[in-house]
Length: 131
Length: 285
Image 1: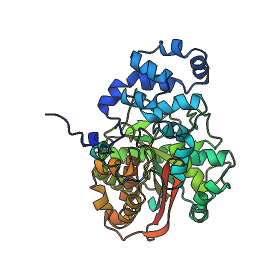
Image 2: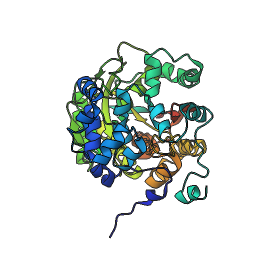
Image 3: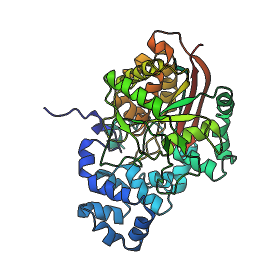
Image 4: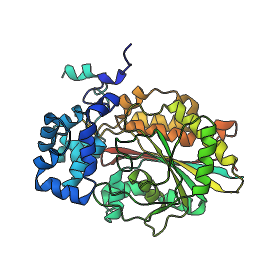
């Protein structure tokens, strides 16, 4: 019998469950390595060579090179781990979160200041399909 | 005997720590947030405990994917400040209470909660931002701190019910301790926020305030709320709020005593991506 995963119908959201975590193990562990200053420097000097030291899939490596955080999340990355990539480049959490929404940095910040993304219309995937 | 005198609840957004560390706390964006903690800083000065039992979560700093403990209690004498990738926060190291923490571990495990015991651990913004919010800038934290880390990063996280029952077990452990310590328990994280995906930036002011109402008046009912409601209504990272139920379960009324006094309540949007909620509940003496 399958596990109950009721969170699959939340739009624009990937829940980091055991399945995602297994898929993203090396991607996330690569991110953890960026907590050391010497590794941050090595990564920035030659990203491709640094990524090739890890047992990540080619898709995961490409998503990191593209800084496509949505793709990283789909491939098993978790935002608290992926944040280490942003930190390596001096990016804030807000810049990283905003980059996944398709909004400009300024528009995202303005949305937050005026109360954030509303819950109405953002609870279920079927609400997004109508748009 | 040791006693739990009060519980404190607060969000632990990293940008709040960064604002304080970089002297931005008087800028208009941040001033409105820090105004909500002015009462709390005076309150903590007037009600300084011997020990704070601080429930928080690690954000891929002390724990990576190599080990994912659901509940981890710090039994070390002190804890360094984590470098989360931006360099360690310029705040004092945290002094623990290894004797008391070991006592709590033994008692709580005997009460059927399988804690992971941690003797070496750096603490991240989840622990230091609540201290900064409540203490302001300081050269030394006002008391000893027992870090209690909960996995809310990899789903499934512990249920609200389990967190609430764990709080009760922590209260029993405290009351089994012979030394007359004044103990506060803090529950941190939340409120509504989502940091990932196209739905990032979600805030649900109405839901957050209903959570605060219910946490005060009907915590046992709140404990029965399933995970799916947190993540759907309060965002994928809003699930952190289950940690507040650990602190709430340690209060007198959850254990047959009188209801707490609401000393302070505050709510503000936004701090970076997040809604900030804050409560101080006192047990009647």
